[in-house]
Image (cartoon, rainbow, N blue to C red; front, side, top):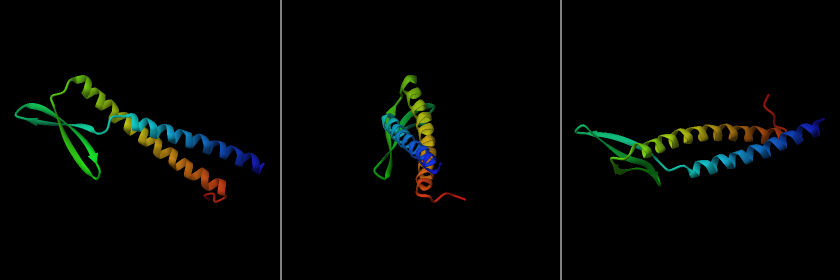
Length: 106
């Protein structure tokens, strides 16, 4: 009985590890940074905000079409979703590894 449970846990660990890789791969495909809007004299100007090394950089994009804005907004939502899923799967992996070692939480 104990071996069956360990087998199921090991299988779940393998699935969780595969899901973690898929989430990380999906995050890398998304465009880096997000758009920031600044209103200057009644006109909207867009900047791409992204981290370069340890600094946050604002890159001027000017006035951009709605399609590009929607693309960045969608990427922002997807990034939040994948980060949340990645966080959950990492916690699950930690739990499964500790369970397989026999250090179960009481």
